[in-house]
Length: 250
Ligand SMILES: Nc1ncnc2c1ncn2[C@@H]1O[C@H](COP(=O)(O)OP(=O)(O)OP(=O)(O)O)[C@@H](O)[C@H]1O
Ligand SMILES: [Mg+2]
Image (tube, rainbow, N blue to C red; front, side, top):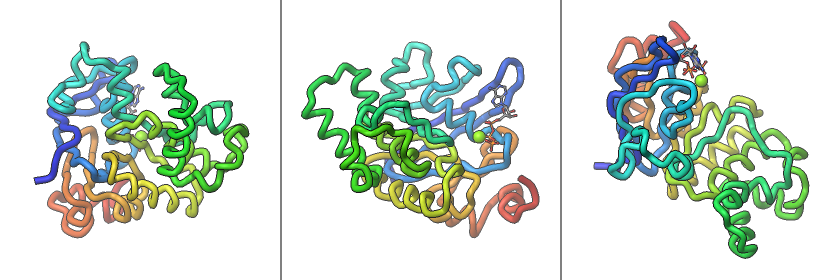
């Protein structure tokens, strides 16, 4: 049995009175990449944002999200800590108008870290993990906005990693990038599995089959099927999954 990093039980999400996600239950395996796939509007981003309380101001989220034996969906959970342990990388690279160095340590500064040696070490560690160190090590004080889109996205990954999360959530992290940057990021993710758990929304079926160990297929707010990626693609158990993968909808 593989360890579970995060267990979702009976998750439901409504925007106002509009229910968009219902009855989603699954266990995200630790140190694995899980892809969330499904047609536009099927609820992938809604589920992803619920996992670290990013829907708090937007939606009503019910159900359990168990992380180390604690239901982090309870109102009393420490949202700041949840987001430090479960980080998020968005679709569009979102560097701050600061130096590369300051971007990486942004979260550590917020946490009050001032020790220069700690900060320097964490910058190098995080940029290496994001496979960006070699490209930027001589320009750490230059503006992050001067980097290419692919570099900016790897910088955002480094910024998320710098607070040492256990899980990272990624919403179509490469959809704004060219094929070379995409494959660099996919390689990075595979290496990161040793340290953490990755949950990624993707519209790119090749990306899911190349990088994800597990795949969850969503349709109209429901989880239709969750299994090893090879099983989902080669031997789907549900007709809706087979139809989606063969391009009948979506
Ligand atoms: N902030 C919001 N307010 C109201 N409705 C929303 C909001 N965000 C999403 N929705 C609705 O919730 C449903 C699921 O949207 P969601 O963004 O989760 O889908 P998705 O699977 O991520 O789609 P895509 O592949 O296009 O990103 C859709 O019907 C969408 O219109
Ligand atoms: Mg989405």
